[in-house]
Length: 289
Image (cartoon, rainbow, N blue to C red; front, side, top):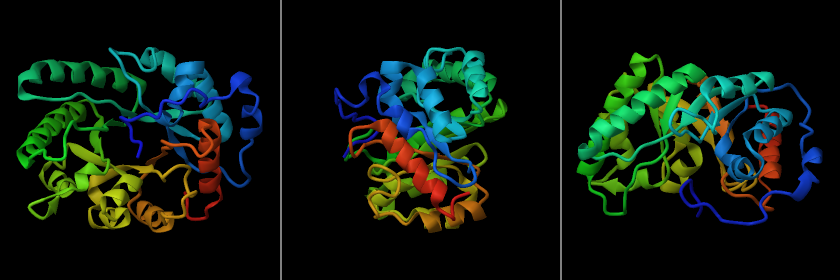
């Protein structure tokens, strides 16, 4: 199963000459909803056509917010924060969250924290409210003490982000739902981080794959989730395996404002079509806000 670290390297993901794109960009009817997109969903298009074309496509489909997945040495998708912000604003989009990460060991503490200092400064200029680390290096036998080290690391980064007026958080996959001593790693995370400085972005698909109940997590720990990834096996709603209504109902109760579609695999190897289909499904659903 594909995840963020395991791209399917397919040569024909995007369409030559944009022949099919125009017919995909007609949004479905109904009132506009606050539907965000994780730009990782169009990662191949970013590489082939550039971020400007991607942002134009996202805006035409009807998405209102984006979450980034590219940061390097003070730039987002190769642009300064002000440049990227201007491009978003010109298209009626806003960037509310960013995915970025650093692997950590105690030996690299000074280097990693200096990296975060610059990243936080950059994203403060961009105006995001959330900085999300989307991954932890691990293997199937990684012991709990290793994760405890990461919890302390998250607390330190979270304190830095909080001082700058930004919320730091962590995005799950499915490996966090492995049990150690009868308890999910994810529950250890939720219990042990500094709740004043570290939040969580719940990926509802990976939570379910791992054996968790996303709606129950939102209900039982409402204060710990500030963002959500709405995801399915491929396009949102296409698998028929995920009941999104109780998830959205609880998100609304919890007043979660930051949520993003993420599409990692594509039925017809066409990312734009998959992102469009996902938008249409959510725009038509009466429980989506």
